[in-house]
Amino acid sequence: MEHRFGSNENEECKIDGISQSWAVISGVGEKERCIQAMNSLENYLVDKENMIIKLLTPAFSKGEKDPGYIKSYIPGVRENGGQYTHGAVWSVIANSMLGDGERAGEYFRMLNPIEHARTKEAALKYKVEPYVVAADVYSNVRMLGRGGWTWYTGSSSWLYIAGLEYVLGIKKYGDKIKIRPCIPSEWESYQIEYAYENANYLITVYNSDSCCTGVKMIYLDNDGIDLNEMEDGIALQSEGTHKIDVIMGEKESRK
Image 1 (cartoon, rainbow, N blue to C red):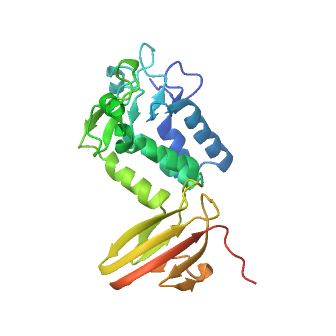
Image 2 (image 1 turned 120 degrees about the vertical axis):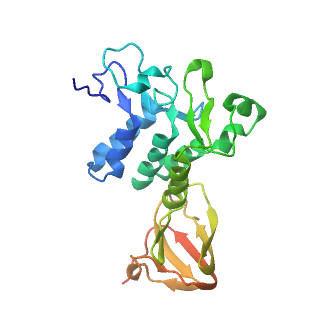
Image 3 (image 1 turned 45 degrees about the horizontal axis):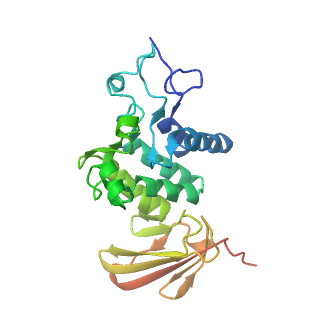
């Protein structure tokens, strides 16, 4: 028997974060519907007070429809309504793709394990190591905010990709890199040390205009680069020490 989930017609699992995010990531969703999908994720799945991004809600419990093995978990644990980090990371990527640096940065911070152990009280609540990514963070009221299944999860690599490629905006294509930040507007600047073969690059991004996205100028070793001529990215050199300065803002028009 076919069951559909993620609809307001459902008693349980009225919304699922994976389908919301992948409406954006897949590239097939209409922009307005994608924005609506991410707003719904924000409204129904994000618990900012406890720093949890739930996989779905309401959790499966006594409903007649059978979603499979996840119903065997206590409501609010692992895939059954807790934060399943592997899926939650995709919300960072989706918001970045929509140009929403405020949410992308905020969600990344919520998923960063060190943020769950800033104080002794928070660490005692989280209960697991703050230096590795936890596969789960529970939303069940009896274990609220507790992490689970550390060390083994593939979501750590997804979180790295989300942070480096989508928030900081550093993507490598062969022997070239593109720099397309999507950050909170309050970030004034940041630096990345990047190694390529025998070369070292210091990348500095400046955001004096308080933008979330947009690059108006790039300097490579103090020489300005025409953005119109580098859509494929900056060619990396295999030797030497170099610096790349990125100025965020609206792209300057050239007459």
